[in-house]
Length: 116
Length: 112
Image (tube, rainbow over all chains, first blue to last red; front, top):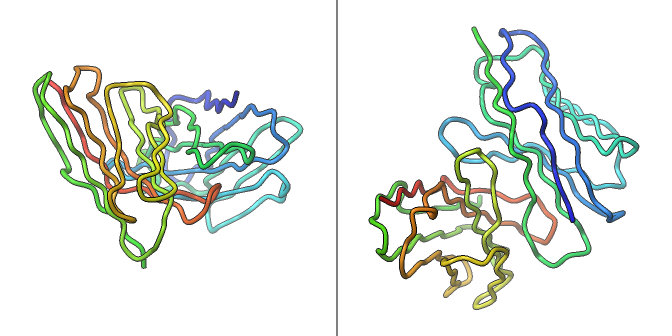
């Protein structure tokens, strides 16, 4: 079975603060893939990042950074110097390699509110 | 560039009525296609996926069905809607298995 847990239902911070969104996953596979998506109020999911289980190198993209730690089964997402436009629901997702062409298993999402 | 379309954007249907939601992808060939539902509580649930024309796999037993009559067209249907079918339906595509998926704008369905 696979499972993705985003324990933070909602986070509210003031603009320019840094914020970290937590993601913990469960899988028995040695090969798997992790994703983060952003869902703004419009509803469309926007792809942010994909990582495979063999690449634990942290990644930075502008104000966004991701910390992948297999030892704790976590794939956390940090936004530095947050902006109001970052307000959205953020989803972490998991895909296992050994199954067929199935879809992603999503966490329940974290609603991020950036206050001006 | 690739684009994905869904229609209608919103839909209000009475219980027991039929349903047809359409999804089309442009700018790519032989994509993997997916239908997800997002109910209250924000979680996304995979409903169906397809790796090719006429090939449909179902993840969750329900009164919904899916079809892929053309390479880049994916249709979600129901013969009789239930109240529990209300939700936000999202179509997605990917190039290969395990690749990132790209989502359409979604259809918000309310069953009354």
